[in-house]
Image 1 (cartoon, rainbow, N blue to C red):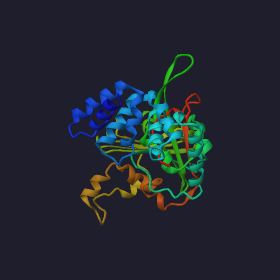
Image 2: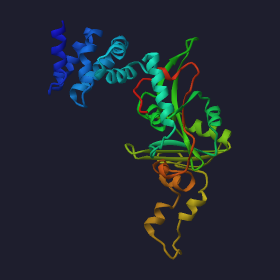
Image 3: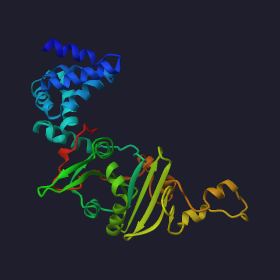
Image 4: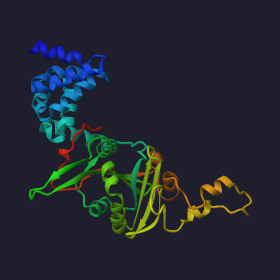
Length: 327
């Protein structure tokens, strides 16, 4: 059987995609014994073989956890990093041994001491001024908020699994999320959660503005050519723009928008610019540059504190979310 497995593992690096797919299917059918044979490929640089081996382990799911844990505890040492990464991918933090979880927590604490966050993603985010973390947590009904580096928070809330289906003891099901709250930058905290904001941004802005007096939402969807920016105060919508909204504009132009509007009597009248700003500012990042902070510039802003990672249900811990996180 060992020779058969070795031959199939060799096929994972084949040039032909169908050959790789067939080898993957046969390896998955063989179950947990194939994991130790896949680990050398998992430790390689990125390539077709590594990608196919990762796909095999993910499809094996829970069956791969014990073999991976065995490598973590018994070696060989050169394969331990790959085993740790795949444990997180397959089973999340809950799949890690207590010693590994403790090591990750220590590393986070050490890195927080001298963290220098870089600029942040500008796809979708909420901005809240002068807000304490506890107020954001309370407003959004978050739980189990833990101190994290910005790299870990972004990885957890945007790049890895950040939502899952949860069945409660009473049989009801719900979608639960991970949410990342950034350090404070020039008086503003940003809130990230790819799936959370996609599903709940309007409610989040309303709740945060009710609790913290003011909250903004910004989103840029390059694929669909959509732009959204929204400002709420004290639980009420104040001003907003949605490319495909109905209506497209909400509220009256803000002061910064009025300053950008032109009429034909202006000495420096520019027809193209006048048309662009005729109804207001459409670009979320431009709006953010006037009335809050841009994620793409936070590296140069004054920073206070560190980030926090939370979940939306007390019944769903961080360990259930799968994916190897950056630290």
